[in-house]
Amino acid sequence: MSECDHNCEHCSANCASRQGEPESFLVPENEFSHIKHVIGVVSGKGGVGKSLVTSLLASVMQRRGFKTAVLDADVTGPSIPKTFGITEKAEGSSAGILPVYSKTGVELMSVNLLLEDDTEPVVWRGPVIAGTVKQFWEDVIWNDVDYMFVDMPPGTGDVPLTVFQSLPVDGIIVVTSPQELVGMIVEKAVKMAGMMDIPVLAIVENMSSFKCPDCGKVHRLFGDSHVEEIAKKYGISITANIPIDPEIAEKCDKGEIESCEAEWLSPVADMLAEKLK
Ligand code: ADP
Image 1 (cartoon, rainbow, N blue to C red):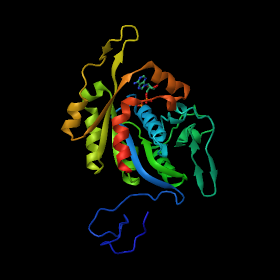
Image 2: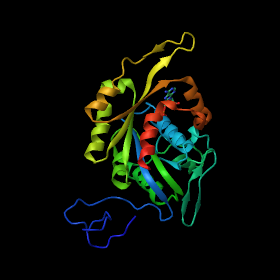
Image 3: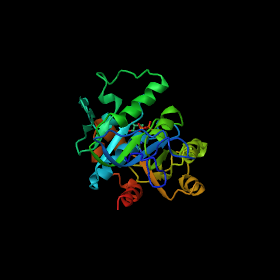
Image 4: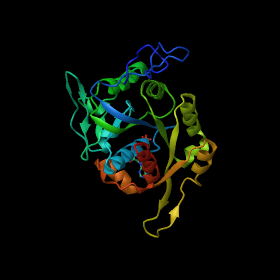
């Protein structure tokens, strides 16, 4: 990150001395980290598959030859280490906390990699939780990262606000279920990103359909998809649909998410890859 040279005409640093512009709350990354892009993965409510999409996107981009990382900002409901089958704990050095590497080399940091017993609940006040997320950015030595995916807690509360203000988020990917789209909860997340001037890069509808393993017929258990409608309304050009697939749930439970092909996410992965061209 560049340093302020007190001449706002040519200096790009985001600092309080920038005349006439709102104060920046950006937090500096660890001095040993090298992070090119930060992508937030958000949802309006819990249980729609946000962590699944975060893990799949990191795995897909890693397979495509990019260096990826996941910052688990879902501090009270962390599921990233389990999905990647990680049981070891993170270690530290005098320079900072070291991320844990997945089987294919994805750099990971989550509160569950720091807790002695990962069934211990995190019963912390909001500012402490938000402070933990900032520490994951400032105190973790992220090695060499092309794409960092931030698994946000659901909704539009304190932590998403902290991430949007403190980290240089390039854009967000919104994960929804067909029901959530009908309920318009997702639009709150999209509008929050708009208020923070953060682009919505893609919208992923999870649990769109279910293919009967016996007769092969595709059923839309939660009714018709509304993803295209919402995407059009907000000018979001990239959409993806993930079916309900018992194999996905099994791979999540067994910590084998990296072996999931996840071809449904190709439109999103193609768009992200374009960013580094
Ligand atoms: P969130 O992060 O939105 O709370 P998760 O990604 O943790 O949701 O998903 C909740 C549960 O649903 C997980 O156990 C996951 O394995 C399962 N799941 C999510 N999407 C699918 C899907 N398309 N098919 C099968 N199981 C799924």
